[in-house]
Length: 207
Image (cartoon, rainbow, N blue to C red; front, side, top):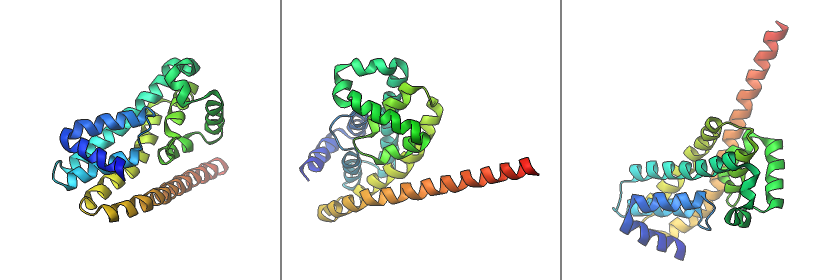
């Protein structure tokens, strides 16, 4: 895992600021896997270069800041953002149309699940902002709930496996599947709560 080792060396030298900056780049769609970046932050904490709880907090803020920046760019500039060379390379017109169609169909659920879809996050967040169909507060709430699931998993995984990279490599793969299970469980809970509220509302109308 050469990328992980390079990130560990960089973060060990520069600490929290480097992790925060790397996560901003991840949010902007840079070809840097967010999960590996978070694991590397956890590893340097496990090696004694940082406090793991502070690292988890810094990582969470970095993730949300990067996501929020993309949402606000889309919200401010709308479809015009597609004319920017850097954005056009990341988000083609065809991809923008697909994401827009999925956002129309799935709405808030897509915003929550986007955190667990590597390669789709930036496109979803820019599109969500550009459509003006969701407020910034709602976006931050949904993205924050998803980040509270994913970010600690990766950071603490890196912390626990800091001195056993072979074990860590195995659990990175398992962690990716595990996050999908957690996300699915959270989505089922949200669906059950929504169904219960709707059922009570119907009883109130007919009562």
